[in-house]
Length: 336
Ligand SMILES: NC(=O)c1ccc[n+]([C@@H]2O[C@H](COP(=O)([O-])OP(=O)(O)OC[C@H]3O[C@@H](n4cnc5c(N)ncnc54)[C@H](O)[C@@H]3O)[C@@H](O)[C@H]2O)c1
Ligand SMILES: O=P(O)(O)OC[C@H](O)CO
Image 1 (cartoon, protein in one colour):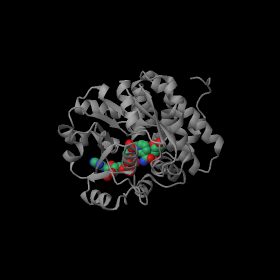
Image 2 (image 1 turned 90 degrees about the vertical axis):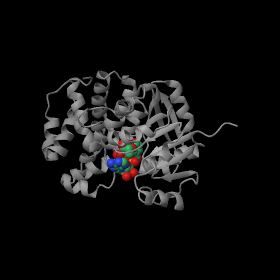
Image 3 (image 1 turned 135 degrees about the vertical axis):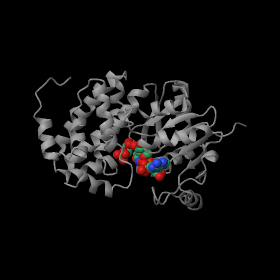
Image 4 (image 1 turned 120 degrees about the horizontal axis):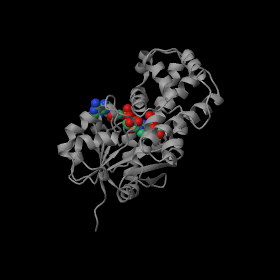
């Protein structure tokens, strides 16, 4: 008899926990690692995650631990779900304990500040594992909705299609439908930049602007994401798929999105400090807008919406002024 697929999920936040549930529902053996032993104990004794997904019952087969070696041992898939800006430091500690042939899977949607590396690049840089053993899961996957087992599709991307197919099987459930893709650059960029566009749409919502503004920001946001992706070697068609348009629509429409909500608070006139103080979870776009702009400059790509978000979030530009500047740029053809 073959043993169940063994998975380790690092990060007991909302998405790490919800994805652990998906893996368990798909029949995998799941160990969830978290920093705090009290939370791991609470997950094991109550089969809930009271801090990040209160009220959601987890499968009894999801076991939590605060012991890295215990979580990592023999894992076929090692799933990483910590904030993008802490990943490098976390992985440096975990790398010696990872199972030798494990596939490393990023659930994260950010770009590292300073290096402007995507998360799969950070993983490769720190662990020296080849790109054929690094995968990502992305798409329109708000953790709360997945935890309620509402139907959603996702993308499992890896340069090695056979690895993507193995991961696809490992996380396929009646409510979670993963598609494979080998365009890791495009899928990963789609997930990171949609957080920045989600901030922009949230800001517009907070300012009381309507659906024309939202439709325009989503579409032109996708255009600038595609321009950057193309320059970085991604397939432009990836951005009309789940990792691009799909995720953008979910994030820009949902009050469950932390990035969208963060933007809404800024658009209503809260300061950055006030907004950070009321944001209890990771809103990746807040830091990644700067690294995405860094990437755009390195590749010589114009990303006006991203630049506007950086201006509002990090340079204290009032949203009304930033929006006026965005709208008064010189006229140009649509496909540019
Ligand atoms: N929540 C979602 O709906 C969702 C969906 C898809 C992708 N994502 C992505 O998944 C990643 C994780 O998001 P999340 O929603 O689980 O975030 P979260 O804020 O809910 O949880 C973050 C987790 O990381 C831990 N953490 C924080 N700082 C740490 C550190 N220095 N070292 C180790 N662990 C640390 C926290 O304790 C927590 O367990 C992000 O990149 C996010 O963009 C989230
Ligand atoms: O809550 P957000 O803004 O991090 O968005 C969550 C997911 O990325 C949506 O797919």
